[in-house]
Image 1 (cartoon, rainbow, N blue to C red):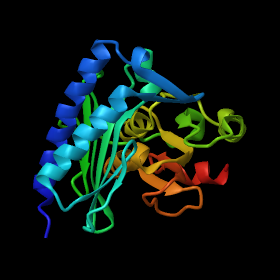
Image 2 (image 1 turned 180 degrees about the vertical axis):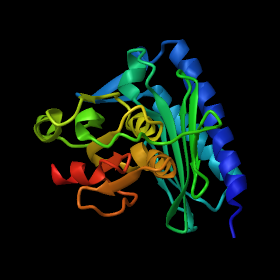
Image 3 (image 1 turned 180 degrees about the horizontal axis):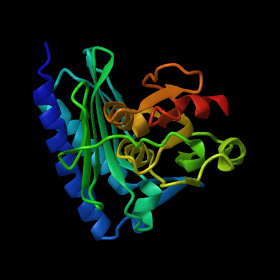
Image 4 (image 1 turned 45 degrees about the horizontal axis):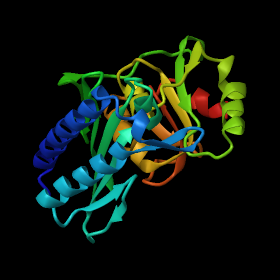
Length: 259
């Protein structure tokens, strides 16, 4: 039997401390000097690897039997029923150009169920957290999805996820949604785009072929804030690359119908 409260407290503290490392690096403006662009939208930073290594070390020091799926260092399998899904820097390109929309994303899956999610945005001084069945919070205050009922009143955030053909993805999103919503926006961080939906700053988030470390924490936070998350096939999300819609729930069916 796992002590979920204890693990949640550890996750929150871990995110806070990792955020301090990320903020220090951001303030030193070392990102652009240590960056390697791997594709038009992807960039690898020295900090990606160092924070990833730090997170993995801290988790395994405290929970040596837990498994980890990390964006930078891959799988650390321990044969346990607890899986951590971590992204040390979501928004690496933002980081490299001093855009404050960068975040650390930590999710914990217990017995196959997404149970804990924390998104730490240190430059924005914001921490989003959710525990299964306990609601979602931003800086210790409860948050909820928007009550927008009409797509024409909705703000949509979106990104092309891990898709190689970025033009085709953006074309699909624009064709299907642009004239139907109030506006389409892109933050450059999937974790924060989920968090925006959870906090009512956006009404929905649509992405294609997104990796699990980018959205795992955000998905739980959206759900615990009263929203809805499914794949494009209207199935529940699983920890693998997927096409997903996160919404306030009220717009979900209409968003699905336009795909």
